[in-house]
Image 1: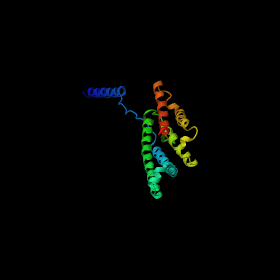
Image 2: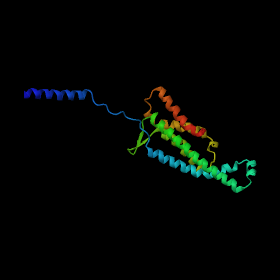
Image 3: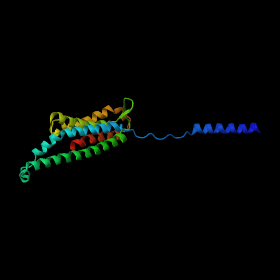
Image 4: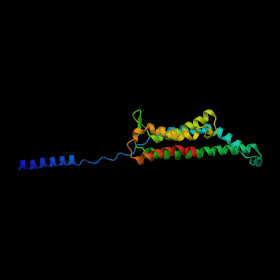
Length: 202
């Protein structure tokens, strides 16, 4: 009687083991990988510092383009200077909001369009659309600060810079999207160029 029960228990254990091998417990699906949040935050802070350094140039530009009739209507130079200061601060705050929305869009595309990421120092993820967003914002503002250029779009090659940097970034990350279908590759290229050039248009 004992041997029979032992035999049944052995059969049960073997059956469970076989079922376990044939039908493994499904693992959780791997989510989209995004660029490390610290890089986004650091880039945003750096960009806003550059924008803040551009504020004297912006104020000078606004002051130089005040219409003569408006200047004569205000009359008081101190009141005009105050209005220029308020306008400059409002510009900075509005630009901060716009850049936050732009980086949010870039982060969304970075996570969904090209899920693959390059890894820096073994733990920092860097995506193609993060690089595109950085190329489209920081170098332009840095150039403006270093050379005192109020309107970078007046510089020759300004309009060609943005799509070119987008294509360079895609080339650097080509191994992450070379296996995509033709339709998805077209989506990648259009999304990259669109994300880059929207800064120039804005």
